[in-house]
Length: 425
Image (cartoon, rainbow, N blue to C red; front, side, top):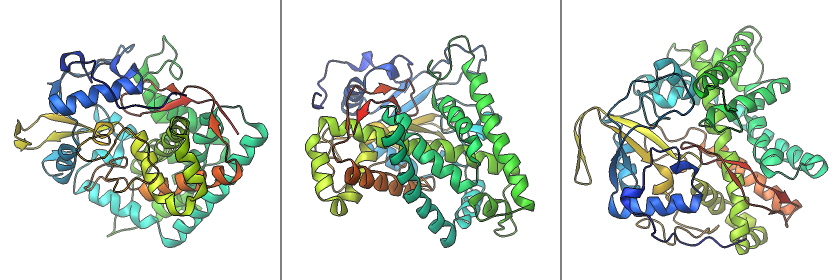
């Protein structure tokens, strides 16, 4: 495999349209090149809203958005949540109807006081006892997934390991029965697909498919939530539906939205980071050897580097509550800004040799779990633990694991996903 090199400038600012679906079908190297150009020449630029290909459903057109591509600008925007609001939706470059916001982003698309209330209730459900049970499930599921892959594996790292591993942990944590695992994975793939034809075949309306997938996940959790009210067991769902914080409880819809968020944000971050890491080890084989030889010392820095390198969630969006000047650029109340984490995570102002995969990188102030502020990923510890445990086990049991082909990229502007990656032990 060819070693990754720092992007060379062949694109001009006028060639780059980060709202275009075609842009997100470009190879990763070309995307990195484009964002390097923007950081240097147009760090805050305006773009029209993207179009939804293949859908008969039309959303009202807005005034577009400003793309924030530098680390410092993304950080500043997230430090002021009273100015940069999340309530109009964070997972698309345009406004969604409220019911779609509920299905696909829930808590992360709320502002205080609602966001603080939801986060408080959810945080309290993760008692020390529940956290210990989750930690134990990570170890157990990692063992089961690896041994199943060695015994029955298809030769596709995503299908064998990267996708089922975090999904089974999330489902175990929430008490979802194994009979629903395939349905949860199918719906998750549809929701993050951005209309990718592998998950939404041509001729099917992607918006309808998104809604149906969201409704299916919502139905699973609403049914489970009702059951756990009367028959609680020792799982997170029981803790959530029966918990009270200052006389507050999650509604059935809030519980369902939280589950959709867990499936997408919790599962996809780990899935994407694991797959990108295996691909990166092909380009930087000395880093795999280095990690295998001294895993205890490098586990923390390696995990963060995998997340930085993958930047699983490409962006989030905010809406200005009031006028604000950011790095000398005047933004107006009502403007939308899109915070590109993938670009911030390779900002030359912050990261030495940002296009080098370095398992010992420190410091590593990446935004793979979001930037500082109230919306920093609630599941960051869980994802880090999942990634660390899986690579510890893979490198100890199968130290020569390697990719045997090029990754298949997900055609999405939101998730920097890998659909398939051939591998061998």
